[in-house]
Image (tube, one colour):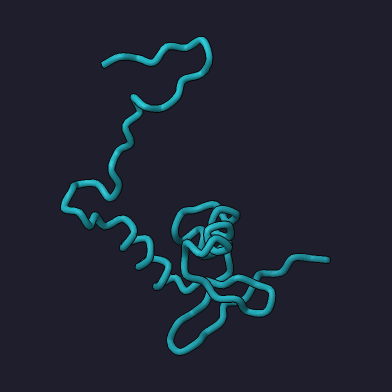
Length: 95
């Protein structure tokens, strides 16, 4: 079975792209993007057995996810690593 280039699909002024092309567009590994789609973390379309992505929706999704909503400079707060359990025999660093 030879692999052929997956075609893009045009629907209502939006072009649905295959996983590899969409992953390259958002600079992710294709397997990571597929996993995110399966988990419902990114917008996607099922066309038969294939997963397709609208690049505009995908870009907007990641842009919105990176926008802070609580007025801070960063989209996510940094975790407090002082409470992370250490490996056996290793002492936690003190500040």
